[in-house]
Length: 78
Picture 1: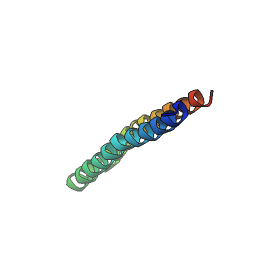
Picture 2: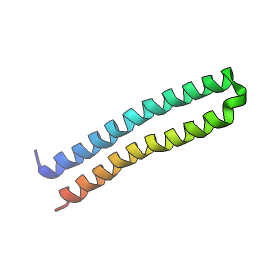
Picture 3: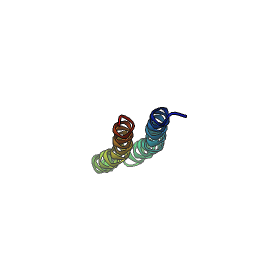
């Protein structure tokens, strides 16, 4: 297999797997937060704040995978 083709394949795998984990985590976090807000509506502001901070950290993980994919792209271009 051509090294350039292998790098492109690795890019796709990195982004795909890098988005899979945070995607599942985000769905679980939002579901748990909504359930918590339904059970205790008076705490909804605090729960929502913590949920949004957690979602931002999860999104950062997906962005790290994208950055790694771009690094693989630059290495394959040489």
